[in-house]
Image (cartoon, rainbow, N blue to C red; front, side, top):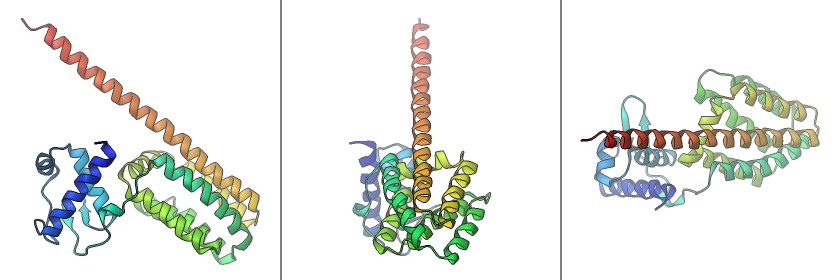
Length: 246
């Protein structure tokens, strides 16, 4: 089973235990180590499963306290989409570039003022607040397009960004290091929209996502190289130690 399918399988099993009453609403789940032993998987897989369940409202992850079962029972785990960070970003590029072009023709002064406020909020030192402002920025542009299908699609793509563990982790790994660049790119989109220039708005939005894709590629390549180096180091220590045995 692939890593992607494995965490989904574990998430489903945890949800089934919740539904069966093994973990009542409001109760605290066993720790990652205990769950990893119970299901015979790594703690990383447990963490990914918990993130996925949190994203659909089945669990609440409280930093420094633990993971708790939510009081409500939202959508099924099976409803979670399966896509890579690159696929989600590619789709966002295609959809949101055209959404920006359409918004440039329909945007109001109130929308412009709201976008400017959100750009300022994206500079917040609190990562969650900055991320929320980023989400509202893209949603506001979608709404300015006056196309309900585009609004729905943009919201769904953002949900995929936050729901799929690998996608969320990739975005976090990239965005934490490029806050200044991200704000500048959003400012370029804003300037084009304020000028009601559809072509410039489309180009600025495409440029933002193209740069994001490049940053993702660079980050994943570095992570892959670090993993190879780590495995090589572990193998070196193991076999050198074996060679010294009498």
